[in-house]
Image (cartoon, rainbow, N blue to C red; front, side, top):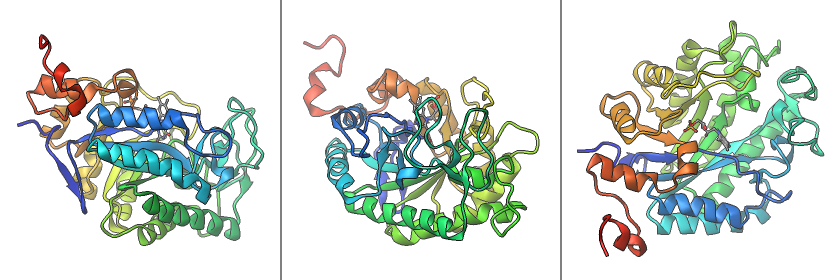
Length: 349
Ligand SMILES: Cc1cc2nc3c(=O)[nH]c(=O)nc-3n(C[C@H](O)[C@H](O)[C@H](O)COP(=O)(O)O)c2cc1C
């Protein structure tokens, strides 16, 4: 019995299998943060391809939290209808649909992506790297505004019809910046020891959890290591995951890096060890993520209890129908769309 193709139930949502489309920015919204036909076709195709959960890309909760002017946004009612169209179609294909809520913090409008109209903000006035703008240090009112933006985006996500919210607390963006001693040099109640660095992300999680229906799952993506001495590390990630779990986060999506220009390792499963630790030590379900391309490997991590779902990023860009092929490889029943059934078995005419 394939575990990859066994359903996964979290709160009131049941995924038809454990294959999740990893959130991937498409940089294809025209300046207003509204999803375009590109998004409709891109996400729709991955649902047709058989994934259990299609997670939409990092979507900014406020304009100054965008990575680029082409980011998706969920900070205005005008942005809802195009997302509704995507969710409706993804649901029609039998997949669940989620959205990653994000704030880019000091990495907003990178030099490569072009300066944005808004000043980037962060926990401390420390730029990401040479050539990057110095972020404005968020004061109490600024912090409350960001938390309120996450909360409002969660309400809208429900109105759109999303099944899952993933809070982006990884890759050197705002919430990760608070968690990491690399970017957070504050001496007030939001900085210093881990408990204080965790306070703002936890606040955001609690507010989102309260605004998001009890029946719907909430995920959080963490960078489980900064790959830097003195940075955020897997020991801290276990503590953070435990606190997030207690605050109602149902799954920790285990990524890594991004707080500084450091290259992560590049072998299949390079982020798996911390995921296993979090699952075991914090008692919170986790994802397996990172250069997973082989169905057998996806099956192995689940069978051996190393993670609860498998996320694929680039492999699903190369092969949107990967789940259909993976089912064949694992001898499982594939969620073929009825329109394509005549192509299910090679050799059929
Ligand atoms: C084009 C592209 C865009 C990405 N955008 C996001 C994003 O919006 N949010 C996020 O958390 N990770 C993002 N990532 C990281 C992926 O979700 C994933 O974690 C990473 O690619 C590793 O998985 P993979 O080896 O299966 O691709 C992006 C990756 C790619 C290739």
